[in-house]
Length: 83
Image (cartoon, rainbow, N blue to C red; front, side, top):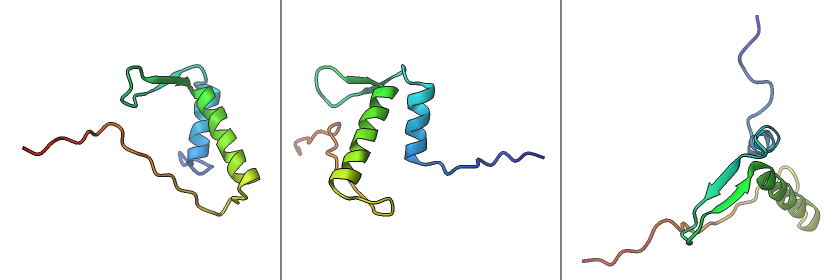
């Protein structure tokens, strides 16, 4: 009997690879609060992600077992005046 358990770990890398190969021409829309949203295909996002991974590894010396974090500003929330 075949199991329904996947045979590879579900990682961000796997999701990006799947998105760029299976849904490469589909668009991802990101709204940053500017007049127009940013639109890129899954293939473009996969290429940019690979470029970042190579820069982290080759230029900055980050190895596979090390952790890297990012801090992003939440551009959706606006500061409202207290009344």
